[in-house]
Length: 171
Image (cartoon, rainbow, N blue to C red; front, side, top):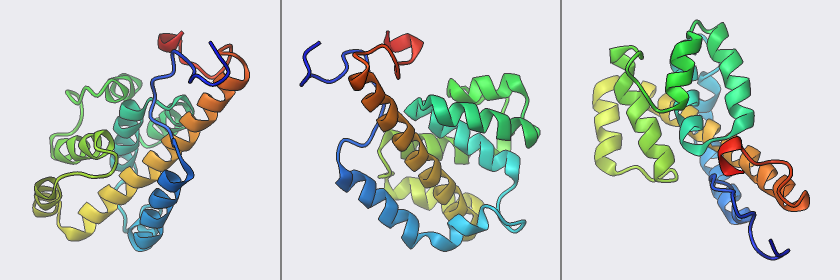
């Protein structure tokens, strides 16, 4: 591996430029009200929020967020078996009423925060505008965390010559 080439095994989504991070940060600031409501009793339920966090983390493959949100999901009452399935993007054991939101969150992450207008309209029609905003805010917040964690791992991999920062599947 040359010094100028990316870490050969690294295949996770990360911030490739400061502008990507600033774009996401700006989006979070414009959605401040729904972001803040996530931590209030008026926000979506903790288990619902953590399921969103887990599926987005499954798409982006951030080991740091997976570790932290596995703990928080378990505290919110999500079983270890379901947590593993969510990280693998398997929704078979998720509550039926949450599956459309989880599919939206996965689509949102796969499109780098650019879901189609139809997907957003469907989400609002199913959950209402306020809950849809909270779902999208939760998705955005974990997306930012995933990208920061993966960017850190990428840099760690580069600095260490690939000895650190890679997932087992990237070695």
